[in-house]
Structures are given as C-alpha cells and as structure tokens.
Amino acid sequence: MSEAQHQRFVFDTEFDAAGDIAYVAPRPKRSFTPEEVEALCQQARAEGERAAITSITAQQMAALSEIARACSQAMPTLAHVAHQHRIGAAELALACGRSIAGAALDRFPEAAAVAAIEALHREIEAAPRLIVTASAELAEQLQGRLDEAAARAGFAGAIQVRSDLGMGRHAFTLDFGDGAGSFDPAAAAERVNEALQAALAAEGLHGEALTLDGEG
Image (cartoon, rainbow, N blue to C red; front, top):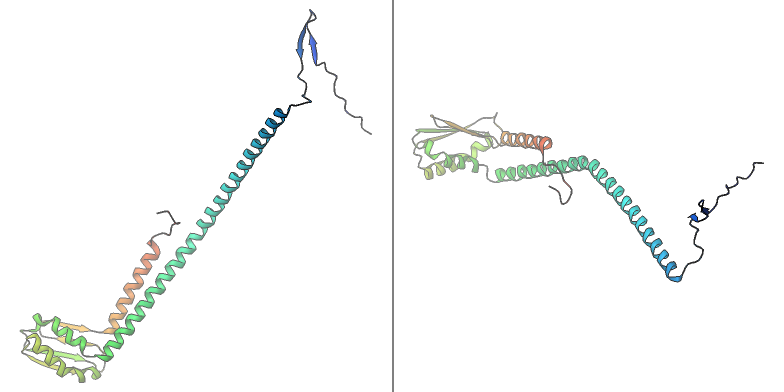
C-alpha cells in the first residue's frame, strides 16, 4: 500500500528580523456578498458564451471548408454533365433540321434548283445553254419549273435536264459553260455534322468553366 503524499507545511505569514510582517499569503475567500456572486455569475456566463462562440465559429469554418472541397470535386463532373447536355441538345437540333429539310425537299423537290437558278442569274444570263443533271426522280419534275425560273431570271438560253442514276436523292448540278454549281443535301448534312462535332470538341477542351453562384 502506497503512502499518501503529504503537503509540505508552509507559513502563510512571514516576519522580518524586526518582527514585522513581511509577507502574508493570500487566502481564498470563503464568503461573498450577493453583488459579488452576481458579478461572478455574469463573468462565468460571458466566458461560457465566448467559448461557445469560438467553438461554433471553428465548426462553421470546418463545415465551409468541407463544402468548398466537395464543390471543387463536383465541378469537373458538373462540367462534363453540362457538356453532354449541350451535345445532346445540338444533336437533337441537327436531327430536327434534317427532318424538316427532308420533308421540305419531299414536298417541293424542285425548289432548291429553282433557288439556285435565281441566285445565279447574273452568272448564267449570258450563257447560251444551261445543263442541269439530277437524279432520275428529280429530273422528271424539273424541266417546266426551271423554264419558268429561267424566264424570271432573264435567261434566254436553252435549259437541258439530264438524269444520272448515280446521283443522290434531291441532288443536282448546274453547268453553264463558264461555271458550275451543285447541291447534294446528304453531303451538306454531313458537312454540317462535321462542323458541329468539331465545335463541340473544341468547346469540350476550352469551354467556359462552371463557377459557383456569385462567382465569375
């Protein structure tokens, strides 16, 4: 059994050589007035509030740091989701455009050739002959409409329509001696698709970064 530690005996009052009191150790106060009690209570409450505020502030800072870390980790994922959404929207718009253009060409198959003659009237007005080559299906429908379009454009030469089984549906070429023009909706749609994919790829590499609300 270990012996209990004993506190050294100390004197709370010291005297000098002349017998006068040189030092008196402070003694704990054992009684307080109501005013002193109230003051001590207020002091304790204030210290408790300061400690609580300090703890809450530390917890808030830790929570904000965790939120910032989570948002930083989520940003690449959100950017990828946003980019995929843009790709989907662009491809849907392209598909709708193709559908509308295809329906328009089915309804007015000669309209593109008529528009080409009207757009090229300056180039073809002095040509003696205009050769139009188109798919067999389209060639059957072009002659009368092209004669009317050429008359409106001031073209007095002959218009010769030829069919080519190797040409795509609704495609045609115009040959007026000094120049030529062509239209192929399938090839045009493919060029548009390639341009769209290139633009989306460039945006994926260098697109605008996502930012938190209130930033940037």
